[in-house]
Length: 305
Image 1 (tube, rainbow, N blue to C red):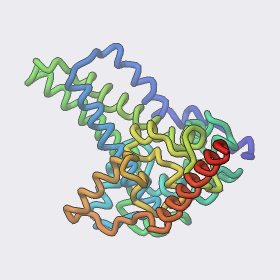
Image 2 (cartoon, rainbow, N blue to C red):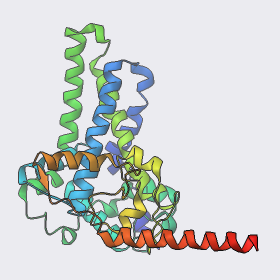
Image 3 (cartoon, rainbow, N blue to C red):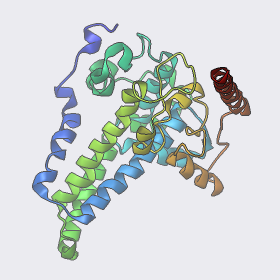
């Protein structure tokens, strides 16, 4: 188990994180407009892609290749989600896979509880540092080091930009019925809140609710609802079984929006070498399904006898 120090939560150090939650409550005060709502969900989608395709499938697992300039774009998109820097995110995630659901796994709901795995560990100063030993491959890039060190810059610029756009729309297109404050609250605060808790469900709920296709050493599960709200990350048991795959929905009916977008980017030549599950995995699953069907038939035959 973790020590008392490792369970300590720093309220003052988490004022920006807490402010996102408090600021989101202002949606009841600033009112509603379609412009603000569309902005909210558009930015949730774009930034979620930055987390899933960038922070997770690229920086954490290197499941595809791209150019240095698009690597930086992915880092900026992920950073705009206010989930710290790309090196910090990838380093912690690689640690998670190495020790999944053991005492060393800092956000295992099985070991440390649901609340801690969902949000508690994020607020603990013990885990605010980046262990660059886990990300030596990306730590060599100065632009990523800069984003990692000044991880608040991009979210702040986004927030200010949204407020400014809202003011311009209020002045020049008043029929949209939006304001600077409304765009800030819906487009940044509430959108970021949705991003936080969509992402956090994979650490917490995806290790508790769902089905297990593969017998992994952890408690990862596949969950269709979590896959929908995270653009495909909810196929968590698939992912833990073969984390090197860019595709986390192993079958066509397992919706994986991040995979679809990456396939489009590959077609455009922006990314390439998308790694997929090896054919042996599908062969094993087919054999397992055939054996199960055979057992059912045998049981049925014995009942007839």
